[in-house]
Image (cartoon, rainbow, N blue to C red):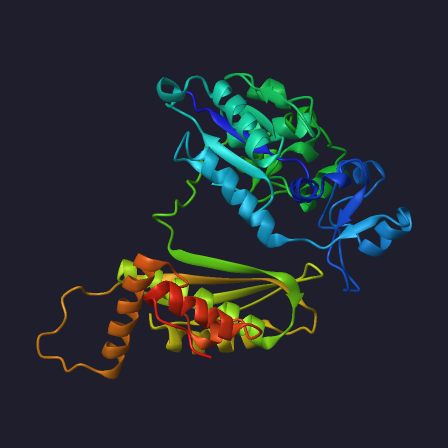
Length: 410
């Protein structure tokens, strides 16, 4: 059975997300780049900026000289990751073999053997594109081929909008007239080496045998020989679904950028409560924790540490130290994310003669609170650290009236 690989690519993905947030930017050139850093580079740009000569990876200072007054937006990495997750979930409705990029708008789907369920892969590509247009406001390019390499090259040819189908058996003819720079898998250094031999097109490189390619590319000759013929046996790596992933992640985006330690610690404790509740429900322990801070200028800071508990006070103490290490700048913070790697499942059967410790009592309390929150809502029981400092008395009054029908006191 011939493989059927769909490659979807949302051109200028970060810029497309920003345009969806602010539609007024659509016809105006803008750059996405971290601000406030002397060596900042362009992370992404929209099509009008591309036509002005701006390119990804370009020095921001050079881009400003080329287009004085151009609008510059700080990157919002958390939003790009969320959008990528939504695209992946829609793709998983058609096949379990989905390989997304990391917040870059690229995604591969292996549709081999699914025609009896969903129809021809071409129809799936059309339906998925319509779903992304309708639900996310994104308009991806797509291509269909028998290998990942050929499908990705095809989307590069029709960028920024369009679709392309490479029929089985046409892979080599499709690639032959193209520039070598369009073929994924041939890196920049290898392209520079080929340029010294006046080789710039696939048709020229095909005249060389694997033995001849071995001279300039020792150990890589066979791979390059296959790439320029569209031969790519590499499978589509399935994405981890929510039920099988080995980590738990949660995040908070602040209404206003902040560098107030109390705001950050309050948000961190809420996230720790979510993680601990989920770990206890799965009867697992956390193995490690990582905190990612997204600053208002688009730069990220991160730090990690080991875990060995599912109790909120103990985990918060560890995560608080991780936060201190990750928070290395004075710039205000826009988004904070906590990622916990899951450890092995804990034994269900407890020891018959083991003495109960203080930790056991704390875990019993935590599990009791889990049951209360599951029945009445997650905000029904709160710690003092997570209360709004400006209105905590009023919030306590509402809590007492709604929960137990008690009269509030002054």
